[in-house]
View 1: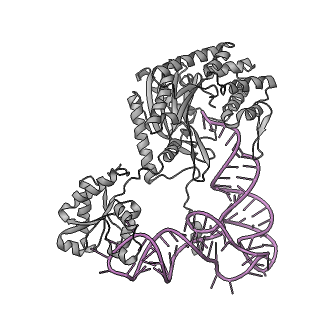
View 2: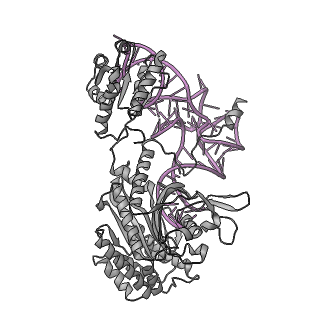
View 3: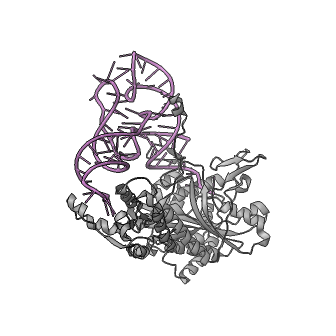
Length: 505
RNA sequence: GCCGCCUUAGCUCAGUUGGUUAGAGCACCAGAUUGUGGAUCUGGGGGUCCCCCGUUCGAGCCGGGGAGGCGGUACCA
């Protein structure tokens, strides 16, 4: 019997690829979202919240030739047997929203959206099946000024989050330039028959940062075997085609101005010419606004997505850090985007040009955690100790008075003795505790013990008797002055390397 | 999806040729040291040895299958 019962108990375990978030991490997330929202609003974008679920056909995620959704999305069948899926990005829901509300939206329509998205994929290091994205998009204009603004907005957001100008850059390219390159090696950039090869080549190029010229050469040709022995099929290009593509990528490392690389290509192909002209206009806008140092043309930016039609851009953190194991890690991409002129047309048949980008919050947060390592811990609540259970109303009132003064405070709600209460306050990160036993009560006083100062003072004490005798950083004050004195201590520590103790801080 | 490595307490790990009741350190809880975080001492709670099947008198250990984790790689709309 007992054994059966044990066997039937569910195991307490977090679903694979998901995470619990609490305490300081959650506070950091909230603060970051507030900062990002502020910058988006400053640029004039409107907030938009769409639901977690969309009809699967609206997301465009049915498997080819089947009436089941793509395995990469979380899907359920509605009661009326319509498939619904959790959104996997913010762009597809935006296209649906615009198609549905086009007539009462201003044109261009500029909106931002922040929230979780879900991907039903194998999670990896720092990659989860639910994560936060922060998007900003402009729909209804084909002006490159909108693309340029997206890049500048990305730069401003990253800076506002506390990353120095020199620690990130926005790299910009244009799909049309790449399409021209494909055309030059005999791959039609628009025909369906070449679509698969085109994608394979673009993806191989996208790996240039990771594998370098030798790796890309293999991926463009016969294929590549990785360290674990797994084999990736290649694009099967001929050697002269490969040379052309790798040569293009290699040129991005040369000392010549990148513009020259694009220009060389543009002189040979009309598609590349068009893309290159757009890039030049964007670069002019960047330098006019003073962003020339952070945003630059980079011919190796590709982006894997198929739906991009013009400028594409990627935000990258450039600094290196040591992780917990002492290894050097590069952060790499924290977001990106580009122009997608055909997404709304899926619904309406009318071409609605659009451009925008997405920032991944968790990667940025991981980066910030390292940049700001050791900085501000949020101060815990002031803890009112319960010395005498018969006096709970008195302690409750003290906590209430502190809260009324805007100080985060709580009465100890456990049932343990004083020592355990001190340990509790310590673990909560309390700036101080309030102590009133029968002695103090008789005198109409309370003791306030500053835990942070106290810890410093106590670290010098070795001897136990001395430890007992010392009451470091502890003062007696009249009960009526409790709030005033606690406020002083909280203020001192708030301005002293600790974040505010005020609620929600 | 494919390849490799790994899985014993909350954490880090021992565990003999297969042999009584599976251990340590840290962490946690309680008590002692007047009513005070640390130190010290004493005590305590915690384990389906990842799961299932097999071999065996007997499996944490051997065999098979599966799951989970980590790391590559692919995919990433």
